[in-house]
Length: 94
Image (cartoon, rainbow, N blue to C red; front, top):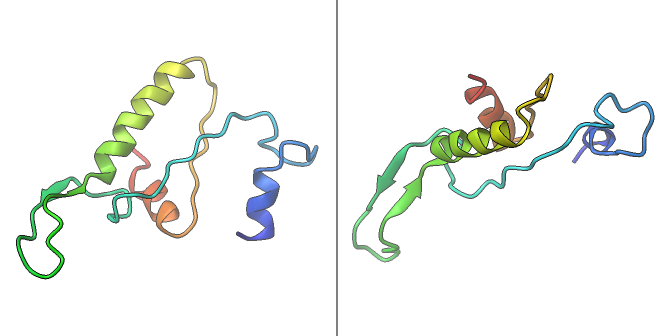
């Protein structure tokens, strides 16, 4: 994580423009860059793991619905990320 990332998450820094914001982290767990919407069964083979849930887009949509219900009076929303999270933030901008 770069120095800028740390500054954004530092609630004690008076120069942080997001100092008083609530922060929510989306864990990266589906391997689809937060854009997938597919349940796949690669079938058999050496690494047969059964159904794989590539549903990052749906996870974001469900999380955003919960966030909206929790913070319905919010005046602004900032979405950001690094690496896969950066791509997911941009891809789920809508």
